[in-house]
Length: 388
Image 1 (cartoon, helix red, strand yellow):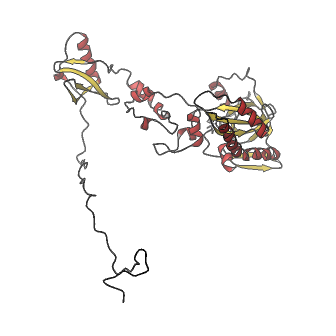
Image 2: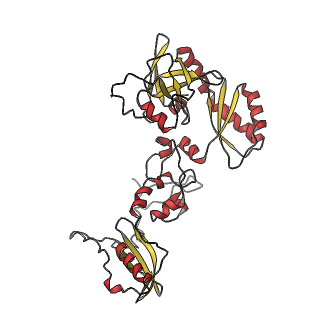
């Protein structure tokens, strides 16, 4: 149950006089929000809306109509359909207005659900019981789905705070008819069933892991919104289209391919079209590769494609302009960007080690005066220097 508590971003709960005051927020929760307006004095018109988080990146906004003094980390009982749910306050104060604007929610017309109260001891006791049932419910639901031969995987289960409803998170490649499954689940667990499909990225973020960069996966630490990633992002960054290197744990393209894409797009805004050939007096050149930030492009002659010719971007534009005028460009005026000077202390040690340094079999040290029994018998082997 402790693992499931951490999945909700809470590590310890402090209670006094049957009233829970504060939840020690787990620092590794990716649903944390940095309230950079926390120290700014509030105005006269304070918005009575708080953001509450639940399990599996689920968040919602609720109206604090009763005027409870809520801060980040408080456990609250909120309105649900049906019954009530237990969540953790993740944001309050002036920053709520920015979050509502970001989610295109008008606080004047949107119908917010209500915050009933701060969670009490009996609320938490029922919540703990619901959390303790999640793993067993998930495993039993998987067996039921397997017996029905449904092409789906139930990845997680989230019980509502009052144990009247459960959300079953599943992944599936195709559309699944789970009407019979819902009927069997409702009969087995005697609760209201809600099925919610998640993608492979959300599933990888739920499981977690270590990426090729050596750090914990972004989707399991801080990412909650997953933007689509295309192979064009790799092409613009001149990356090799190797599926084994570009795919993440979810077997999809890595989300980090989008991190520096805008920088590359801005830098390549004035680059010439790489599909155009350059007609020169020495032959026709075609594009091979590009160094975006050095503004260098490499071309090869059709007659000798193994040799790469570095040409600056400005020079490539000049050559293409000459070709559009119906003339051939002269490579004698090529002023490519030179290589940066190397340090006088630089030494290239590549290839200095012998390739056969591990081929020589060293003589293993043999211990003398060792008495050991023969295999399959109790006789002692002969020893040239027996122990006296």
